[in-house]
Structure formats: C-alpha cells, structure tokens
Length: 290
Image 1 (cartoon, rainbow, N blue to C red):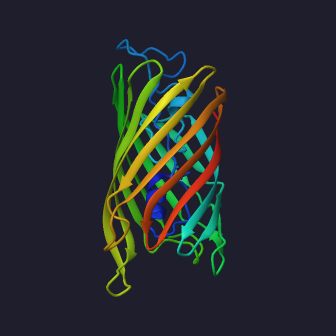
Image 2: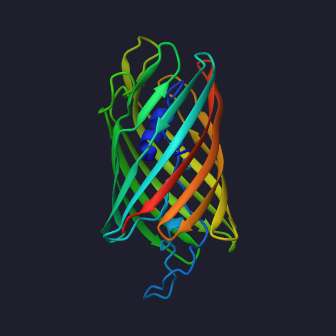
C-alpha cells in the first residue's frame, strides 16, 4: 500500500505523518487468492496455487503474500507512491522505486531484500533522502485445494539518510494466507506483529513499542488475466501512548506476460493522529527475471 517489505510499511505508517513507502507500496503486498492460470499438478494431486506471476507478486497491498518464488527464480518488484498528508503539517511525499528483490532458495523458502528508495517530502523544512533497507525471509508452509498459508519475518535497519531514517531498527513477523472462495473471488490477509521505535510523549525520548496489525482483503478476477482488489488493515498502536490507525486500499492488477505484471492502486488512512491523516496513489511493475 505497498510497498518494500511490510516491516518497512508498518514502521512508516506508525508515524503521525509517514513518508509512505509502501503500505503502501505500502504499505503494499498482494496475497493472491484466486488460482493462477494452468497451475501445475503436484504428486499429491493438488494444483500448485503459486505457479503463476499473479499468485507470486508481493505488492501493492498492506498484507504479505503467502506464496514464495521457486528455487532459482528471481523476482524484482518496483513502484511509485505519491502520498498527500492533510491537516496539521500538510505536505506531499513522493517515494520511488520501492524495489523489492526476491530470490527462491528451495523448500518453499525465499530471501527478500528492499534496498534504499528515494523519498521527498514537501513540508517545512523540505526533506529528501534515501530510505532504510529491509532484509527478510518467507516460508510457504503449505496449501490445500482452497487455502495457502505461510510465515514471514523481516528487519529494517537504519541505513537511510539522516533526515528520513527511522528512530531505530524495526522487526516484523507475520502469518499470511489466501483462501479461494469461488473461481472468481478469494480472500487474503496477514496477522502481523511489529517491534518498532517511537518517541515517548512524556519526555521525547526514544521508546520501543509493539503493534499487532491484522489485515483482510478480497480479490475479484476479470477476463484476460486481470483482477481487482480491496483491503482493510489496522495497526494496534501508532506509537508510544498513541491509539490504533486504520487503512484501506483498492486497486487493479494485470498480467502482461508470464514474466511481467503491472498494478495501480489508491489507499488512505482516515484515522487522525496528531491532527493529520493521509491518502496515496501509486503504481508498480513486477519482473520475473528467471
């Protein structure tokens, strides 16, 4: 919503006026709930739900996808996000390319890496720079004829520019799933927990805090390898001493070839924190290199 790994998305979303890098782009990971075209059969007789690029792409929603890329497969996802912060401290934030690199390691495990993106905020004073980097791992634990599920974990390190880096390293773990309702409609979602660093409202000092972030979405397939999605997510704590924050997003995805996919999305957090809320628009592209 989307965006980069969800650890980074949650960390950015928890600030009062986050420079969204992906909840979006964050923000930002699609768990595909509808079967991929022409899935391959497994020895157990079940079709592999993670064989097509539509099922594998890991953007642009808040949830983390359940599928992993196969051994030897490299997938690169990129996106652009334009976020409008309204209310107190009104400003506009642009972030790109929100790169997300995924490498299949075998046994349904993949390694993940989000290098720095460029971000620019038009507030006073104007801030620009490189975002932090994120490292992660994901395991596709199993699937049935309708359900695919797995686990993921990631860490975001303070490698960004001084003006935009987070207050401290953040860590995220989540249970991810998709569930096929019909050949047209499916569900996706995550149950995530993050350990982050914020500012204490009592004395302004850095303080680590935890936040639970469940999300749930619905996909609807369209003819010609296209689909629509809509999603709702909530984080339990927006910072030390702060309440929860809710999000919603919706968008469109299209497969252009077995190795190329594009998306467009809109999302918002209607929750007012420190007098501010935000919305964003974005788009992205995913390449399956091999």
